[in-house]
Image (cartoon, rainbow, N blue to C red; front, side, top):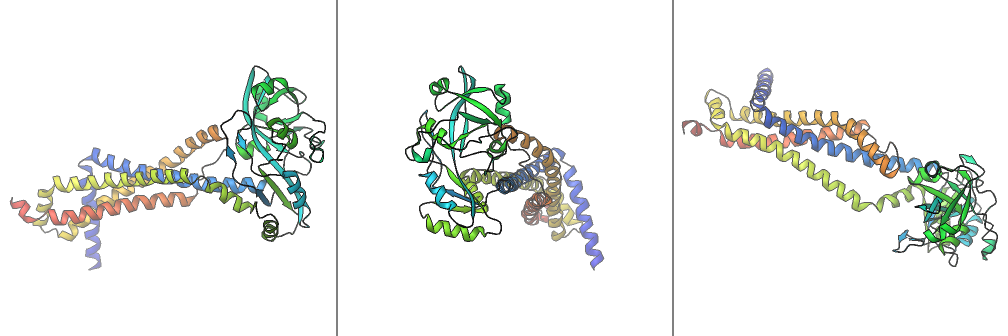
Length: 414
């Protein structure tokens, strides 16, 4: 009995293959549709895994254990200081956090948009990062030059009347684009007019923040960036980064600091990554909608192929019943056609995945500056194959049921 069922199944597979070959153009269209659905799923999954993995790698390599923020970074419609930093009294808060016995380093940082150029007539808006000192005691690495070694002397215990060092670190890409090196002077300012009047000395080249943010960066002393952007009154910063002493428990210290600073958000590396990714919910939702649409399109194409085949070949299917083919075997044959279409789409989608992922990865790197953002582990291909088989099986079941109800002996007599 088992051997008979096996022969019947193999016969259904062979018959399904022959029937698909009878209309190769329509079959190819359905396979391509399922393949596109598979490709959409694999690429979306690879981007999601890549973003999470890259984020964890960036946070782990930062050398920081806790992140303290005063709220989201807001964008204002103005030329000078368009980024509204929400952490107030940054220097004093940092000093308070450093007093915790398990805290080794606590340093405030501010992000702002400023104009930088090698000459006054060619200024470009890039991301500025304000720090207390670099590299000593910070997570900033200097590729060449001395860095910001004098410390944040302009702050002068809150009076902001200390000397300005007028030193700046540029990322390698910006330095190359401007044609400058260590020791050269560049124009820096919060506005074009202000940048034309101020010259800063390039004291080093650092790729730390350009790698972390994926954009061109200039690193200045925090107080000098605040002075340029008019934010000294509230001592504004974007966040505070905290490095703990060896053996300290990040969760315990986070709880202590959160209790002491209830108006601020204190997060671990993983919590900070989750918060950053959570702000991209509309983008993720849009991508998920596109994936769902692609899967629905693949299902519609495969189902349309099988239903059209059943409709056009009702007399042929009825004749097969007349010579002894049971309705169950007939439904199995049509259902196998759907499965074969799904397998073909899975093969096509998975073969296209590495090629499409490499091309998309290069495009993403050119736009946002992060390389190897797409990750395609075996789980991604298994997910794509599951989608293809699911689409093929579902369309095959529906078409098989339709064939069993449509291809009847009265159809042959008619």
